[in-house]
Image (cartoon, rainbow, N blue to C red; front, side):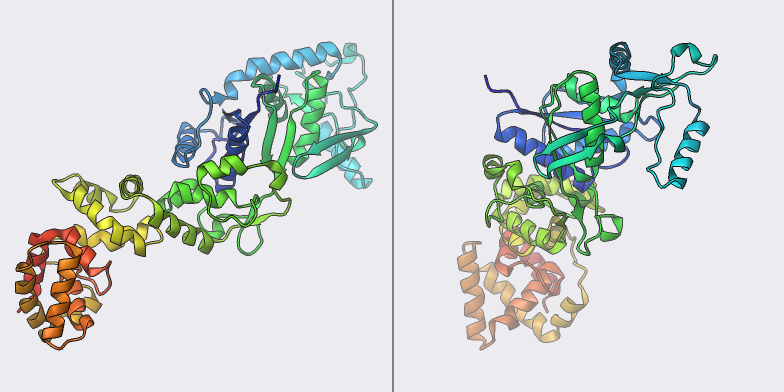
Length: 474
């Protein structure tokens, strides 16, 4: 019987979903889906001082926006403290761990001595083989792993390859603090085992933890899950992606007007590839994904490439679906409430849907789309930008007055008859089309640039279009 693949995404709830974490979640999700397995979500909230419910909600919100779901309920690491202690009791009973009564000051002195002698600063194993009867009274011990002192620990990493760490470089790490709280190293191992995790996929910055966690698995007599440490994401300058490069949280990209399907596609291509394929549907990613195609080198985040990819998804997404994404964006956008209010009134949602074909052709983000669409909800008389004011000369206003009558007489308010009417008028007056279209654009939108003029006329409808034209006509 084939073993079910189980992956996990295990973020710490100390802030928003970092874009690096989002990619880790995506790789775990794709790997599980590709093999018909499951991805679990574990919230590593043992750091009570820094963990907040707000951050947990933000993580879940970010994953949900990206369309990444998980099996079962999210698991709180903090809620499993008693189980972690139980595992340590087992290790003590089996001789795989021991009690250490050194004070923090004594441990620091050991490290200082090691540094002075040119050795790695580590605990020296003082209590490793001492008789428990020597334990000082009134001191709560820490519990340490009895790590092997000879040989080596080998990790057959599915991305980084064979990683070998001499055991002499690994000290007897703390499993349980003197106050009885488990350390991160221990909690991760116990949780991964109990959750049935078969594959640990995480950032390469966790590779240093892999050997120590392997020793804990072995100390508990448990199978070690397969491990894959994926490369970090760097900024365009080659440094680790940080706030100085711009947006680093998933929620920030939503606020910048990116679509979740574009983010998924872009993140999937950061460190993983499938031939020369740039644009991939979700089903393509699931079908093609494999850890063998994940590279070892850091991936560089290219904001321009993301923007261009997002533009593709803006154009190719069905209008009704794009409208729903637009609403999600508006819920968090500055002044978005005003637009949502407008959308909820009368036939305005239908008006927006009619406008989307023209709007999405010219917008690379929902921010740009909102700006281009703003003519829809502007109230008459429209405020005009500087470019529109220059276009609306006296001659232009005369043209608008004549054009108003021409358009009013147009039987069908659809693209072809409207375009024919405008072109015929320009020919009759011996005017270049731009001399007619530009004043029309300025009158209808209050801007010097806009979506296609016939798209605007259709979106606004006959009554509103003629009213706006007449406002500027003379």
